Image (cartoon, rainbow, N blue to C red; front, side):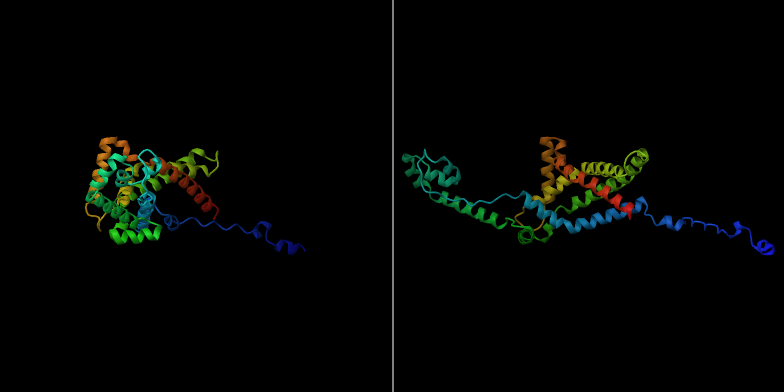
Length: 284
């Protein structure tokens, strides 16, 4: 027994030492994209999205800005002093004939010859043309834009879209990354981790939307214009001149018209998006 006990190694020699942890190699660190690579990929994605989505954006703008086209109708003759609501519904030529005083009706009817007929024909033609261009849906809008204005009109406003996508992407993503790091360091575990991406996403989107708002106004005006001929020749110059006139009459702040609804749409979305994204990424 004594020889067997002495032949056993000390107890500490049979305990296995823990394996050393593998240190992170420079190759693993290089797998993380740099800020420059993130900006390039974001700009490329934004340009591709602009090319694919601009036709739908044009149709959406036209659908939101179009008005209901009502065909002018004529009613039966009334006296001059009765039925004012019916008077308001009639077109100008019929008002002169049906609602003229008795003593003047004969002279009006006698003189309403070629001039009134030409006005009626002109109004009917304009009403028919407007009804032909009225959009009854997304696909109907695409077909009518191609038919009356050409296929290139579907990408109307692409140049300001591309021009504003680069600064918007840089400000948005770089600003978000920077603010998220700063807010996370300052909070230092005193508040929930979800608040840092929530606040960073909201603030970054606010700054980006404010910077590009004049370009977005210019793009929306280009997309909402109905042209009588195919092609976009002279459209850019005409819209630009209209914006210059607006600034001269209403001031520089008119370039940020519509910023309020844009912020109400984009800021909550960005805040909720980044909060959910960071939480899901942390749990995976």
